[in-house]
Length: 143
Image (cartoon, rainbow, N blue to C red):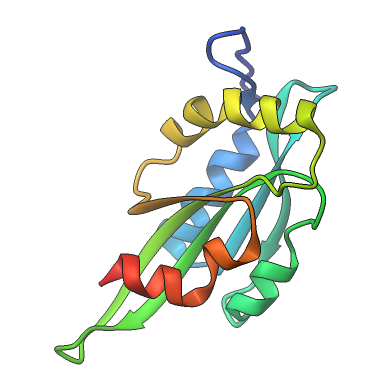
C-alpha cells in the first residue's frame, strides 16, 4: 500500500515504490536512472521507467518525453582530475517548453515535496530543453 499525502501546499504524494526505486539506485546501484511521473488519478509520483546499470546517458535522455514533464534521478559516474572514480546522483526536473501549462504547474508545485523524499541527491537540475541537461552540464556540476 502506497503512502499518500496531498494538499495544495505540498503537491502530490509519493508512492512507496518511488522511494524504494531511488534507494535501489543509490545504495544497491541496481539502476543507472529512474524516471518518475505524476499519476493524477492516484495523486502521487510513481516510477515510469528504470534503466539498468549498463545503459548510457543517451539512453536516459531519450527516455524523457519530448512534450511532457517528468522527474528523474541519474547516477553519474566519472573520474576526477586525481584519477579517482566517483559517483554523484543528479535530480532532474524535466519541463520542456512544449509541455502543457497544466503539467508544468503540477510538476512545479509537487517538486519540493518529492525532492525532499530523495535523501542523498548531490545535485539538482531544472531543464526545459535537452541542452540544459547535456552530459557536459553534469560533468561541469560534478567536478
